[in-house]
Image 1 (cartoon, rainbow, N blue to C red):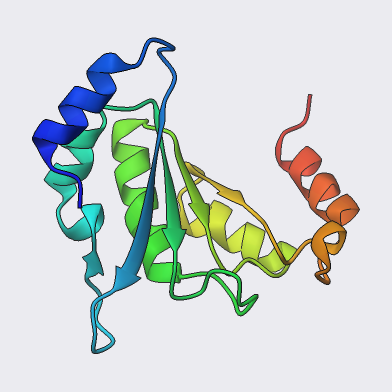
Image 2 (tube, helix red, strand yellow; image 1 turned 90 degrees about the horizontal axis):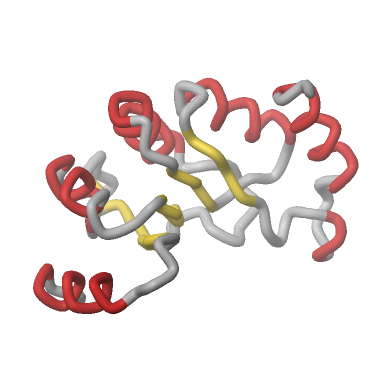
Length: 141
C-alpha cells in the first residue's frame, strides 16, 4: 500500500507533467455500498488530484466478467467528477452499448470508460464498430 509520503516522492520525480493514477476498487464484504481503497473517503480523491492529471478506476468485482458495470461505483465517480471537473475513467464489466449509456447517464456525463475483453477484437461479443458508432453519436464533430 502506498503512503502519502511515498506518493509525494514518486510524483515529484516525474517530469512529463501528465500522469494517471490507477485504482482497483472492491466493495467491502458483505455486500456493502462502501468501497475499499482510495474511494473510502471523498477527501482522499480530492487530495490525490494534486498528484495526477486523471484517475482510472477499475471495478474489480465485475472486471473481465462481462456481466455489467458496477453501477454504485459509476455513480460515486460521477458525483465526484461532476463536482470537480477532474477526468475519471471507469473500467469493468462493460458488455454492451447499453452499459456505455449507463456509464454516460449515471456518471453524469463526467465519467469516461474503457472496454477490454468484451470487444470483438479481443474475443468478446461487443462490436468495436458499434462502440465507435455510439461514441461518434455522443461526440459529434
